[in-house]
Length: 95
Image 1 (tube, one colour):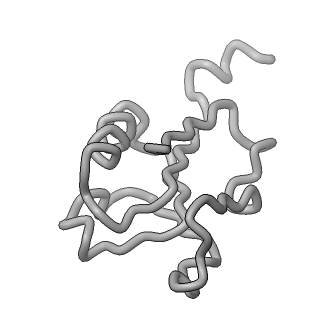
Image 2: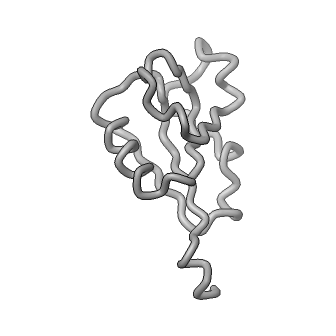
């Protein structure tokens, strides 16, 4: 691994659902403050329920965004974030 990778690390953030603004989302907001250029991968994103939080963030919801009623609670699609392209992936979930 090249030392330059640590100067500008490729970071991705993963959060299960962004459909309410509570304690877990506040933690994500703090982590995103440390890595503001990191994309946030999530299963579902509801901008209205997030009350303007993350409005300038690169939010990347899964294909399941189109089918929220059929989403199993604990399903996390690895296809959302190809782990090979990132130096660091931070996964945070309340469960």
